[in-house]
Amino acid sequence: NAGVTQTPKFQVLKTGQSMTLQCAQDMNHNSMYWYRQDPGMGLRLIYYSASEGTTDKGEVPNGYNVSRLNKREFSLRLESAAPSQTSVYFCASRGLISYNEQFFGPGTRLTVL
Amino acid sequence: GQQLNQSPQSMFIQEGEDVSMNCTSSSIFNTWLWYKQDPGEGPVLLIALYKAGELTSNGRLTAQFGITRKDSFLNISASIPSDVGIYFCAGQLGSGNTGKLIFGQGTTLQVKP
Image (cartoon, each protein chain N blue to C red):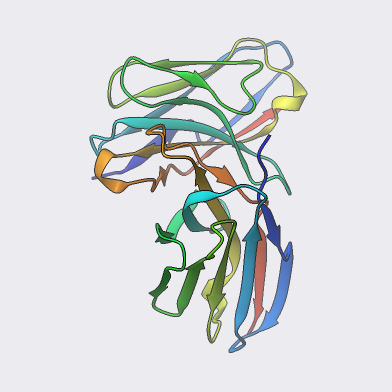
């Protein structure tokens, strides 16, 4: 039982390049979330998927798109990366019986030059 | 957007000392969660609180859900070097099933052996 996994662990992009961050969970959780973490700002919600087939914007969605591919997988896409998107990205999931407890992946450290 | 004010921002203490940190908001929350993040890792859930006034312990950690539902504190007793990390509070507004959380800015804890 790996929990929440994220790939890649590290990525360096040039401004304007695109990439997709992958997230998968093996806990049969219904809800999945994408956050970004910047120094001194805690974690801010980018997008979330309350259940398979639905996605909604969070606090900071601009410049990102998401896909809930199936119940296990939730990907985050940067279509045209900007230096302001340099951050650490975390994926999390939550099950119906775990109330509001979210379980986090190890993170993807992204640098945009 | 909604905000959680977490304090202090950082603490540098001697091994064996007790630690206290808190989160406050102008909004009412129905769940409070406390997470710890080790360097280079994702946040890990420490304690979850679901009722106003609830006091919950997990080993040397104790957390309380404020009676007004607008605040929570976390205490760590007899700190040890492995307590080093960033501690986040998180709260959920309302009773919706999205599971969306709002995070505090984090308290960075350093423990001197």
